[in-house]
Image 1 (cartoon, rainbow, N blue to C red):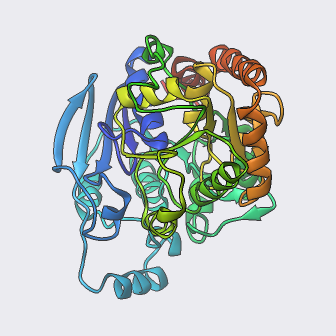
Image 2: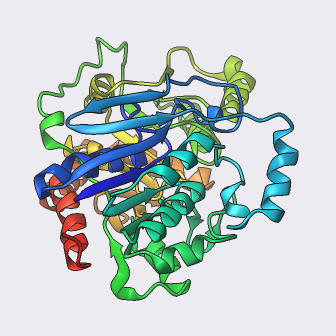
Length: 406
């Protein structure tokens, strides 16, 4: 069967939803299918809605036997006005045109002309879910909808992205099945009227082979003392501002740890770093920028604690990577993290924005090597038992087969 996967960014970009889609496209060959990934030319998320940030050349390439087609994001003049008009007048509702959904006219034209796809796997942005749904309906194809919905904590939702303001509920109810990354996310879809038997709580995974050979090298990386690593796109909603504040409190108490902010720095975090630059102890903060896979592994292997106090991660693959290397984690009561971490078992979970609790939990781990080892080992066993990419993708394709697809 020919499968079509839609996602906002793809290889060589390495991120959560991006990696999830690529692994499912690669795994399709094992199940006898042929996959094509449709994506944008964006590298930085800012390119989705403006001419700021980096982008790649549009076009076609093949990676691991999977065809990837990058379509150019268009940036029309008077974009705010145009979005406002389309939100009010275009079919499909506000979620298709709210930020950060990109304008992709060439992808829409390609989908209108293309034929012969047996199944559509649409991911992440409401505009891509809608385009995938329209194509599947026209072709009589099956569809898996995977919103990767970053909606905050169960009792404190965030409205940063208007996931479900328009056609999204109909898209989900019409899909062959809907993939959720957590029980919390699954409950949202059931409340929308998606039948329980068509909700698959799947999660994400890791490739153990990639992590073999990852060795700690703190001296080579210029690190000393215990290391708290945060590996994400750093901004206020990812908890990076709170993590910096918690570390500053620990430093005032005499902690000698190093905080590493690895990954892109968003504008609000840039402002925060500039505001406190003169108040930080020398050498205790490291900011790396975007990391490729090899560098990611070096930093993960060299840290003592992985911190992701984010309300905008529906799963958090980096937690799995840290556990696979025997590291404890500190997460947030959002997405899949409460289910995965089990507060006090494989790490700690804190409420978003609770800097005092975050500082306390980090301090406990930094002072307790034995506790770190025990939590990291429990996490490692959990990951290896059910959160490898092969296990995750096999669950997906088994469900696809149950839906009557080849």
